[in-house]
Length: 304
Image 1 (cartoon, one colour):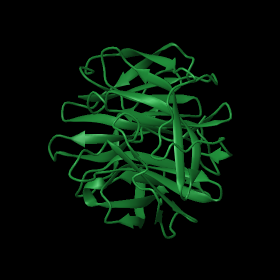
Image 2 (cartoon, helix red, strand yellow; image 1 turned 90 degrees about the vertical axis):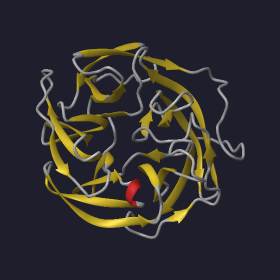
Image 3 (cartoon, helix red, strand yellow; image 1 turned 45 degrees about the horizontal axis):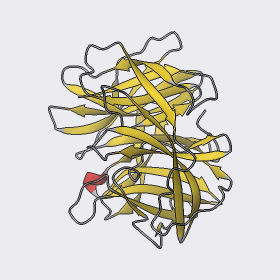
Image 4 (spheres, one colour; image 1 turned 60 degrees about the horizontal axis):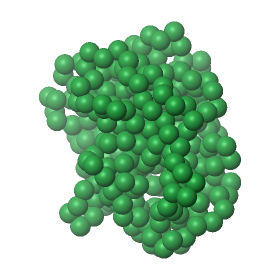
């Protein structure tokens, strides 16, 4: 089953942490938690998660309040639909707090707005329809929005390809990348969290599914991103010796991962961070590479 790992770490380090201990959160006997996204609002830290309900065999979006003294509240469901929801990407934009959860089962990408944060949300718009895409991850880059999406193609899995879409505004017309799918690689395609600005680089957490779904998380530096180009370089990795992991996020000193395996009853788990060799191969469909420009995770708030 899945669970959540969380900890507060105010240091600026990322790939050179070595080993790190995370507190563990699991669901109750009727559910499990996965896909954590941290958000801080008015001095309170929250973790938005997928809460998968065994009674309905689908996920919904829940939130957990966590505190700097190591205590955490109970999960509370905040968004539920007739179809599966997961990967609750929460962000602030133009004075509002928004969420884009994964709804690949419904073949759409929808935008939700917080009416009364963090517990009341309303569906504001459907941004894309007719696309069975998973773990949609937005990025603001060079005056436009980008979606990183893992599509299900050719009756294959939902983790072995990457497609990109771009638009001038979040609710504008979304254009597919000229080379979609820009990547076919079970180890470096599916998004695993928000893009992180770190040390002058834009790092994209990706799922390593080479040995199966939820194996580990690799950090890829984005080297090129444009209407007809994309390239990335693997630069680091996070994993646990005994548990799987397929999501990593950090914001305002709160660092979160998810964990797959025998997590119920665990209070703490240790993970390992490792940088990769400088000559790690560049991943991209056309071998395109170039200098990393000015990438922003979001124009208003950035992961910390």
